[in-house]
Amino acid sequence: MDYGFYMLHRTFYILLFISSSAFSAQCNLNSINTVDIKAEKHSVIRNKENEVQSIIESPPQRCASVQFTISGSGSRLISTIRESFTAVLFDGEEITAQSLKMKENQSDRISFGKRYKHEGFVCFGKQQVPISEIQCEL
Image 1 (tube, rainbow, N blue to C red):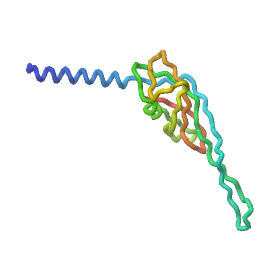
Image 2: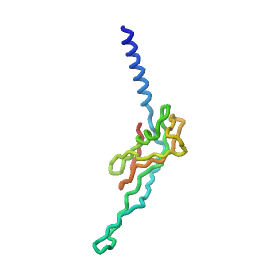
Image 3: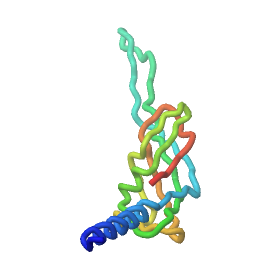
Image 4: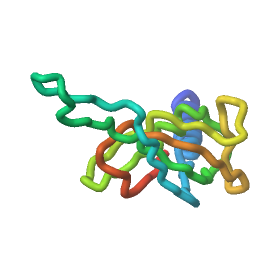
């Protein structure tokens, strides 16, 4: 067997092993408490006589307080973890998190492994329909 081919073949398997272990992390949700933040804005509809006909409130911001662990080892940017959170609304629509604030984390990265339990506050935007389920998939 050609030595160059052998080294290329070996390098391919090493890269395959490294890439599969890098993506093998899983997000496990331990606790979820949904929170609806009432909107302070509203619209007023008036008739021709300038009388208030109706008041329409903006939909609430749909958020959740979450506690989670990430299996595997290493660290990730919080922005990539945020993109892992999705909410399923009661009407079946799936939406991705718009923000994730980590409790007691001053850096832009979080370490992961079973010994690291993380707490955060994740928001999914203003929605008329409430959240029925939250998922975290890396």
